[in-house]
Length: 284
Image (cartoon, rainbow, N blue to C red; front, side, top):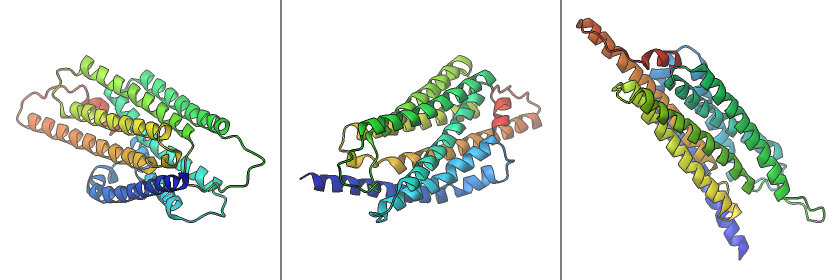
């Protein structure tokens, strides 16, 4: 009775990942117009590079996972393909997180000490997440010399992968705490659209990522192992979609702030000083 359950779990995971690729493609065309408006004519800087990586490398990562889900590769060695797919997944998610770090840095009025701390913590988190996952995975599944050879192309992930999502949740909680603290410390009485766009967009982004990451941890820890890959592409797609939308919203609000200041100057009314405007101009 075990085999049917395993098959259902693997099949469900495949459906979810292929559907995730479909959602990513659909969302791309929905947001192509704002991408052209808010990014294509901008100069190349760190923000744009991270945006391009998080938005377009997600297609490569999701496409490779979808291929692994639908292809028949029983007699192939899939280790190199899986390693490349995992690396592209990580790079895409890290790029999306990089955009969130830049927004947090701008929200903290370009505090370089904070930026350095966040970057160091991010590097430590990535290194620990990857290395601990590999070590725990090798300890949890020791090789049995007497066992018959099995295919390494099975569409499953080790339960140790939940460790990576645990580090992601911890880092997201840190960024959210910093954002909420700064909002009520320095911008409590601010009515700026730019401040609201950074705060509300960032909090919604982080809340969604934390929720999906916790769901991923629960799936990998509680349900049968055949379901472990079920949220792989959906989580990647969520990172890419939300990062793009927050960036578009941020630049739209920045543009509105400029128009409002121009209108105030044209009518000879003194424009209110916006503490966020100067810092966000460098970010966008």
